[in-house]
Length: 306
Length: 326
Image (cartoon, rainbow over all chains, first blue to last red; front, top):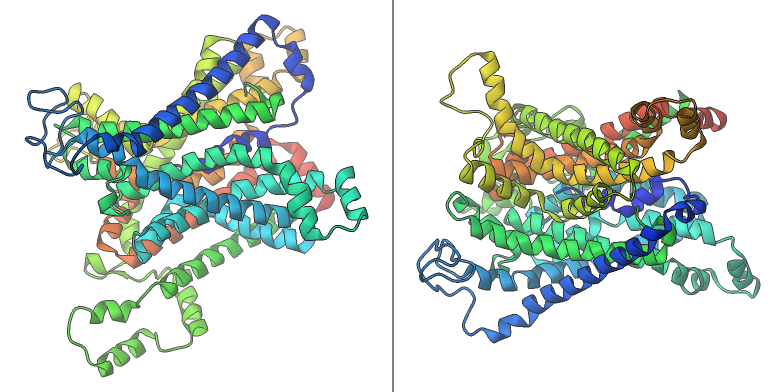
């Protein structure tokens, strides 16, 4: 999977020259309101979609009795066929819908923890590099660059294959590969802000470096970090799905990616087995991107519509 | 020139760092090669000690590291336990061309389609097509490449029967050279699309954003003012600056594409390095995995170096700035 981190909007922002503020004004008036409405609608749609997915994953299963791995009918029954279920049955006669419903719990847990780790490493490295500059910056940026050239998914595959597919190794593997984007963004923010009046004022009243970094400047980088976190969460889900598809996850979790891998030998006759779990991955990542885009617009109106 | 030389040295440093990382990954993993061998039968402490000596595992870590670096730099990546102890370098050599073909095709799709769609979208930023591009970018990002692969297979191979379900060539195939290329192309189309989709989406969005910027610059206004046709303004004048952001991200994304090939080759039974890596995951064939990691990382580092040099050529501002401080 594409290392999705590489072309999230940060790169667009980084690769783009400063936006001429006049541009927004030049846009035709009659469309602007509509466009803003559309943008917000997209973000709202994303939020509703995400809530729906969380509901299906964590609450809906309580309304069903029995284990989700129970056999419910003949094998390979198409959705809606006689004796079948709404989403069909798989190669063991299990209900595809029932398995996919809970398939997100492991994925979302892993992706959430990995996203926390990514944000943690990214902000720390970025803050130290940006604030101290000089040789600290130099070393940390070389380090960041190294992790950027490592082919992310492959590196994660090697770690999980060597150290065994447990939640810890998967979270560590994903957490280790995806932080450079955030580090670069936070560094840029620190470079920009460390010479502003309010930081000088903090220094003048004798605040320590630690206090300036974490209490004074850090809160002002939050908009950037929060926007990026939703995108990071999306890519963490894609990484987890890719690993699980290759069999590098806990088989008992029957996560979406793992389940696609389990059904892959039967796709010629059983299209529902690979389609539905993938649809859930797709909707989850899409919802996070929509939310991220909406937040981006709110945090940085100059980039609206880009 | 001086700067390019510095970049080359830096690239070599990165390659060395990858080798050291590879070594550490194995060294820190639970158990060593001898444990793995000894696991199969009854072995006395004496035999294991002997084996450790034979593999050099009794030496200090630094010596082992030095030996390892030396071996890798000479092209010795160890042997594959799952393939009758065939050298990993040889194994990768046999499987590299399909992967290169696949990833270059995917990248070409991404650049050509992405830049074209993005440029058209930037021409009329408020049109339905332009907003469609933004939606397409979001959708493309959210689709896992391996899932896209299955969707394509189900649609074009199973339901419509237009394209083959996998592999790189029809084994029963008989025919001339051209017919054979046509056969290869049919096998290549879907995997390349599955692998490239996410980048087509990303590049169209990136191109749109950067072209919106460029189209407002004075030199484009001048080109328009002197009466040049829209096509000439867009594709000859504006695009030159518009693609610069794409060139900057391309080098890094090369690694992501090659990583993605592991998933896509698994879906399409494409006989490349990615599929080899998947087999190595199943067999826990450490040397092969590390070999592929080393190879792809090195490819990315080289691609980055190349991008950097290309970048200097297409954007003279960098060259000038470089000669000032370098």
